[in-house]
Amino acid sequence: MKIALLGATGQTGQYLVRQALEQGHMVTAVVRNPVNLAVHHDNLKVVTADIFSADSLKPHFKDQDVVMSCLGFPASFFSGVTGYTASMAAVVGAMRDARVNRIITMTSWYTEPDSGTQSPYLIRFLLLPMIRSVLSNMYEMESFLEKTEDINWTVVRPPGLKNLAASAQELVTHEGYFVPDSSGQTVGRGDVARFMLSLLNSNAWIKKGVAITTK
Ligand SMILES: NC(=O)c1ccc[n+]([C@@H]2O[C@H](COP(=O)([O-])OP(=O)(O)OC[C@H]3O[C@@H](n4cnc5c(N)ncnc54)[C@H](OP(=O)(O)O)[C@@H]3O)[C@@H](O)[C@H]2O)c1
Image 1 (cartoon, rainbow, N blue to C red):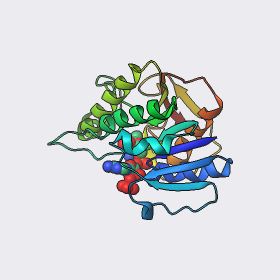
Image 2: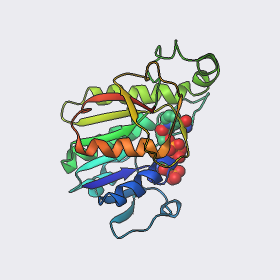
Image 3: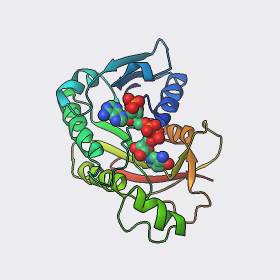
C-alpha cells in the first residue's frame, strides 16, 4: 500500500517506517526535519511539509491509500496543548482535497476525562494529572474525528510506551479508553507499530477507538 506517514521521525514512527518497508509498503514520510529520520530505502520518500497547513500537506497525500500518524506534542501546564487538534484539522482537510479517506492515528489510554478513575494509584494521582493537557487535546481530536462522516478513521490507544521492537506477543484490544483487567500498563513502540500496520488489512476498527496492549 501507499502510506503517508506523519511523525515518522518520532520513536514510534521510526518503528512504523521500518516495519512498513519490511512489509513491502511504499512510505512517504511527511516530516519537518528530514535529518531526524535515520532510515533510507528505495520505497521511502521523505518530504517536508507543515502539519498545520492543509495546503502544505495536500500534494503529499495525493495518490496515497492511507494516512498514518504517530505525531506527539509535549505536555504544557500553562498554555495547554493544541497540536493534536490543529494538525488533525489540517490533515483531514488535505485528505478531503487529495481524496484519501483512511487514517490510522495514535493517542493514548485514558483520553476520556473519567476513564482513569479505576487506574492504579500512581497513574491516577501522579501521571494522569501531569499529562492531562496532552490527553485533553487527544480527546478533542478523537471527538473531531468521530464527527467526520466521510473519513474512515481508527484511533489506536496504547498505554505507556517503551522503546522495544515488535514482539511475537499476542496483542489485546478493547473498544474503549483502556484495556480492562490487563496485567501491564506499558507496551513496546514496535508492537504499537505492528498493530497499526495490521489495520491496513482489516476493516475491524474503522470509525472506532481501540485500546491496545500485549499479553
Ligand atoms: N510516552 C508514552 O508513554 C505514551 C503513551 C501513550 C501514548 N503516547 C503518545 O503516542 C504518540 C507517539 O509517541 P512517541 O513517543 O513515539 O512520539 P515522539 O517520539 O515524541 O515523536 C513525536 C513525533 O511528532 C513530530 N512532531 C511534533 N511536533 C511536530 C511539528 N510541529 N511538526 C511536525 N512534526 C512534529 C516529531 O517530529 P520531530 O522529530 O521533528 O520532533 C516526531 O516525529 C504521541 O502522541 C504520544 O503522546 C505516548
